Length: 173
Ligand SMILES: [Zn+2]
Image (cartoon, rainbow, N blue to C red; front, side, top):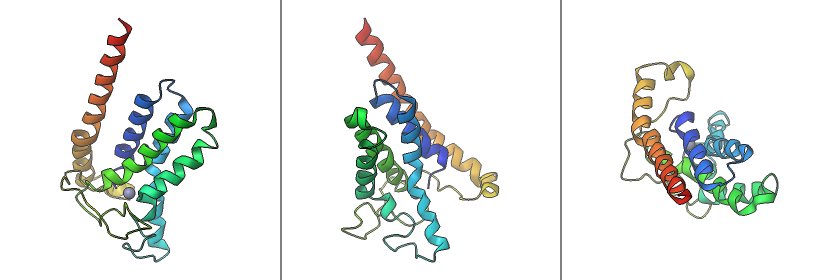
């Protein structure tokens, strides 16, 4: 994983930029959805191997999972604004695997599960993999994670906000 902050900020940015109404509930669900795939770390406790389809970075990090989760929310909490909910939740959930595939450690991401169990990384792997425990996070390692995420996640998100701000501002004139 990138850290929960790194994942969460991407969900936040997607919701703010895509949803013109900027509904608070959608922002919350988008941030939650961008972190959700890592609930699969429970696989380690259940003795499911990392490379198993239900292992860490497996099914919950796949395109199919993001689709199913987005459809589920679109027809429940998001039913009054289905199309926006679908796109925000789908992209927020999928963004998790995309960030993981750019991290420096762990195994690759099973984007194509259940059709293909291969694990993928992108050629660009500059985001430092984040420790899972809190004590490890408060270390030199944690600082390096924050620095790499600042460069490769926070700044790009900030640029997206700036671009959107100027587009909206420009259209008002
Ligand atoms: Zn992950």
